[in-house]
Image 1 (cartoon, helix red, strand yellow):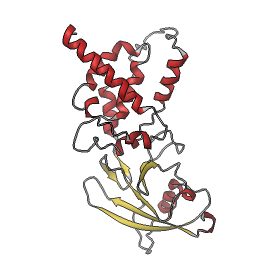
Image 2 (tube, one colour):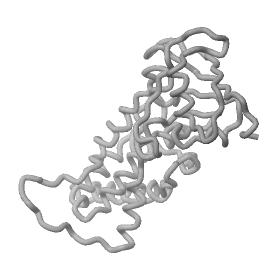
Image 3 (tube, rainbow, N blue to C red):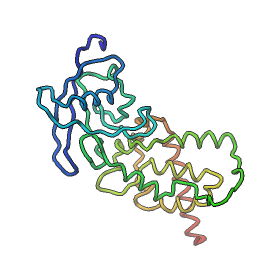
Image 4 (tube, one colour):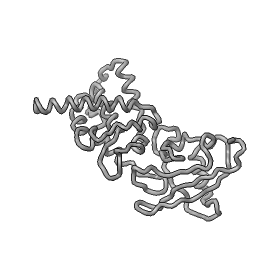
Amino acid sequence: MAETRKTIELRILRQDGPGQESYWQNFSIPYRPNMNIISALQWIQRNPATKEGKSVSPVVWDCNCLEEVCGACTMIINGMVRQACTALIDDIENPITLRPMTKFPVVRDLWVDRQRMFEALKKVKAWIPIDGTYDLGEGPKMPEVDREVAYDLSRCITCGCCLEVCPQYKLTNDFMGVSAIQQARLFNSHPTGKMNSHERLDALMGPDGIVGCGNAQNCVEVCPKELPLIESLSEIQRATISRGLKRFFVRK
């Protein structure tokens, strides 16, 4: 049981820089109740020595909000991709294995470069282009049912969990993944964002868009915010088909 633990054993896959060989190191830290993975890594940061007593450089990881909002601390913990801030030591089997996500380039140790996710958001223009040079007044009202759907979609934290478990999302291809696809649905459903919906759909009709999805549905299992990802994929698929037919027959 957690209360009887004296130490926590961590096995961490490390990498000194981009493109360098990875290697494992073992650490042993004192157990304290209510620890999370971040607090365990902070202890190692203050006491950078392996279980064997060898002094090493502190383990590098990424984090910010510490409340499962920013998505920065995503890593693979005991084989499952999740946020380190909400991964409680008491709920995880000891020894604990930590490794970086595999679908993004490693910067160092557990820190990966998620820039590809943000570039995908640029491709689908995941924003509302409003001229802020003057007061536009109140925005258009949304029906409550549409607002509830939009709120769910807006809770994406760009953590990358959905992409880590996606068999179609690889370092060697350009597939944008479901995170960008569901954000396109969010902004296409906005009363003002609809005026640019055709641009988002056009961006998703290429080989790196919706056609790249194999409908494995692994993403639903790991999304920390339980977003309606399958609904978004279906909605965008229907919308792109409609857009394609319109472009074919109307040439617009």
